[in-house]
Image (cartoon, rainbow, N blue to C red):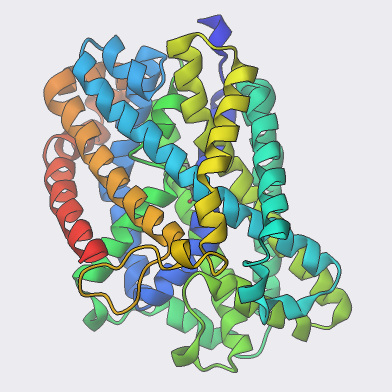
Length: 457
Ligand code: PFF
């Protein structure tokens, strides 16, 4: 087993897993989902889902990984249920799909860092042409995949953990720094209010489904990323408290990212929150103008800082996304890590090309699919995002169902007791018991149907 590698300690595991969780999902996607979901109501639902539904799924994934010391497909076989390996394979395929488009957006963010550093604030007004300049953004995507592959090729402690230990603390300092500054801007309070004061009349099924999708994506659940990371965790570590730290970390960063961003947005719109540029462009279109208004020096420093931060956050996530298929081929086909990394990085980069050209450059991929009843066609990247969302929910639902009724919850609890002496008599055991056996399977199945209907019809 030594050859597979291990995290050196609990902190290393927590930072790497939190690094996987904290990414574009928190800083790029969360704010525009909040905007689309009607503001603070979405935030409240998201918090409830993270702790009540996602945390038990995370605990289960890590337990399955640590018990078997295997990739998501091999784990089910090792537990004695070979047919369930297809659930693991579904997760691996989802990871490949997510990384294929995630890497493109990460490339945009990295490109924005370079533009900001040169003081090109106009880029926000030219976002549309920026993302159709496929040679330039293609180069950034190559660089990003290259950096990801480099870290993954260095293995667990020497690559993934080391990168997370440097990048995650830097990220926190950067967010807090920009946040403190954003609070001093005119109209900051209007942005904060929009973000934090819920209007419960805004709750509807679409908002509920959206908050759950976001919680799953943000916590990297349902595709075995945490089975994989769990497989490198020592038996002496406490899974339940580690998972709680990871959840808190991720939720905390998403929360602070919103708190940092909405004052900036309110400042840029002069306090008119009814008229903000939503969707994928929220950060890319709005922020350069905000940074520009801070004057050339501060604008360049903060602007470059912000997009560097976004790139760092994305990097610890792309690393985990690549690690999942790499662990699979290393474990199952006995391919050397370096070779596995190169093969998977090339395949996934190629799979990302339609997403790269599908934002205006190629008409076919830009107007890729027309959902029933929709006014406009949906582009390829957004379509993949929808596919991934439903696959993560389905995966999460099936993983907990498997643990409770196939593997059996006594076995799950036995794994959770290792490294956690007080577990058997704690309220957390009762909480995990009830959520994993009843609450998660039932609610996730219902919400899965809801999200499929919402997304595609
Ligand atoms: N959690 C990441 C984010 O919020 O950006 C995205 C992600 C990473 C999803 C890894 C799934 C995963 F396995």
